[in-house]
Image 1 (cartoon, rainbow, N blue to C red):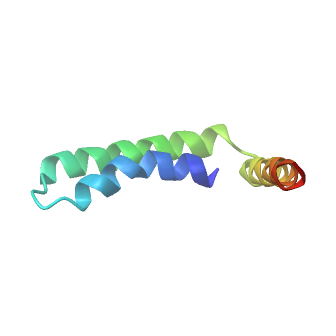
Image 2 (cartoon, rainbow, N blue to C red):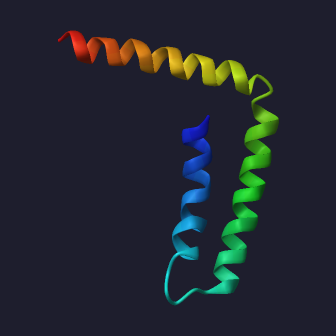
Length: 68
């Protein structure tokens, strides 16, 4: 879930850190990110369960990497 959030906000984050900041582009990216986050929230009523599943899978994958 957090990975999805970071993917959504990454473009706005990058443009906000540039020297030649284009305010209109930044505002558009922020509005787009807000919209995508709302959609993500509506789609994932069981967001906490999704996070738990992702963590469990990460642990399983990590254990395989460490045992090989």
